[in-house]
Amino acid sequence: MDPQPRLLPSDGPWARDSGSPLLTTWDGDGGTVLAMATGGTRRKKIVEWTRRYLPCEIAGWAGELGGAAAVYWLTGSYAAAVVAGTIGASVGYYATAYVNGVRWVSRTLHGRAWPMRALIANFRALRSIAIEFGPAEVIDSVFIRPVALYAGPYLVGNVALGWVLGSLAADVGFYVLAIFSYERFKSLLAVRRPAVEEVGHGSAAQVAVA
Image (cartoon, rainbow, N blue to C red):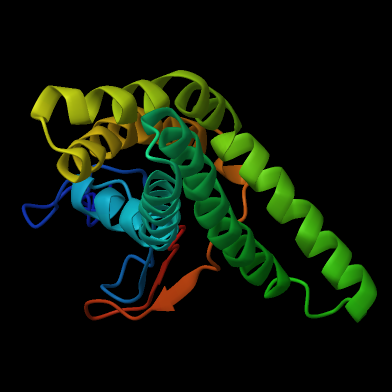
């Protein structure tokens, strides 16, 4: 007589849909469960994207608003302020993304000599920025952001508020494109190292790719 089949963790009433692929190893005796989550739930994805992009965004906003305000104060020209704001945003944003990329890649190269480690880390950080942000930046800098920053003050009747609202509108379009590249080409990008956690009654390794 065949033994009664056992339920795996994903088969029982306690199973929960994580919204992402889940690899589970079950020893059949109620012992260790190893689970590798890929951050597929909507909430985890939002946290992942926020941790990746928020520091860059803060630096970009500082460069954008600071550069635009300084040039407008010096020249009184909307057009010159828009150009300065666009350049300032790019400098602040990508300097932060670059430093983070070098730092994340360097952590994975402990076995290499310092000169080669620095060379590889810088190359991979630059490659990561080009793949993740290249298409989004071209479209944003050439079309979306200049139009939004120039039109904002005229639409709301206030320079400062118009710049803020215009920048927010441009950011939406930028991140739609950037996040698509991030999710599509993640294996080629500089990301945070995996974090190992203990969960439930067993052992679990959770990959945090944020």
